[in-house]
Length: 311
Image (cartoon, rainbow, N blue to C red):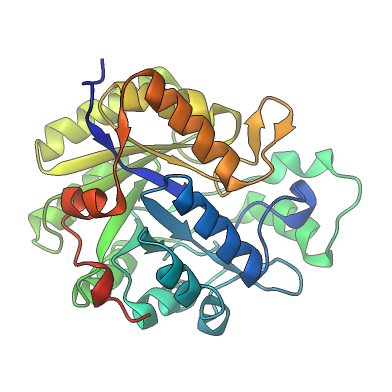
């Protein structure tokens, strides 16, 4: 059972790489939409804002720094939220493309995927008879051949590049082997505690979104990292709120947002990231669990501070 009055870091993943414009009219695509959604999520209580970029013309994933420049400074100025940039980008991007924005803007945090995996959404392609943009259908259907590359060399390169800039990581672990990969790098001294582990459930190609797996990942992380890590939970699609809630009650932190699920309730699209932030906030309040302010999140995660980024 969760301890009353503890502080939970609430991350909002505003827009990712795998959902496409056809799947939801509410998915933020343009820089203005991403900016507005991020600011609103921070005002609704999000401690951390996790960000990807999309081509404004058609909503396709991009790592272009000139697109990030259209929304990052405004979010930085308008909120105190911790900015967390992706280095995952899309399985179709090179490591250099995925890392470009984080390398340029030197955020307090960036994501870091801790192993390669098959990352697939192709089973949902048949739900859609028409697609808004030409790129979408091939992108979704061809995900049966996607390998989300995160080799040991790739991971080490990102760790050394961003570590030198004082950026810390949201270590995304899609399966139990990723925890062991992370332990390998900690043992080598490439990362230092506190380590922020984001356990990811429900991606086809990764560990399933089941309570037994949640408990298994938690026990494994406890055994490998002891008191040297901060645990958070991310669950995809319909499992998002139930599994994240269960993880919080086991002592974890929470991530929600339209990157991870387009829905608020079964069959009901979320109309904004704020919808999910507010729902998670209500659940936490029912258990007398407080959401960490951005500065409290910085303290918990030992971040370098908002004034030490290049925005």
